[in-house]
Image (cartoon, rainbow, N blue to C red; front, side, top):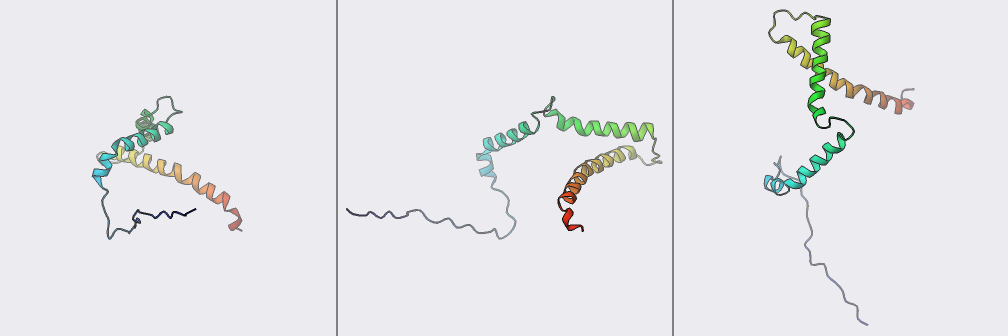
Length: 121
């Protein structure tokens, strides 16, 4: 009985880091655009499958938040803005951005504090 030795005929793949910042290969992205669109569609579908209005929630959520800020700060509280043009719109947009950032940061900080309570003494 003879032993047949099978040799590897494939060349090894060598991965080297780029010398500088390289742009993605747009031809390759265009070639696999169907896969890219499918992955994006799947993520959006999974993210919004439990909402009634689905994808429209991406557009409606910031608009509703700006409307709430306008009603509360502009009409009910009547925050003085002086003679600065477009100040209320900028004030409302900044408030929405600030609210959105803190809506994410504070719960994560609380969770991190809770799970690392043994280090606080």
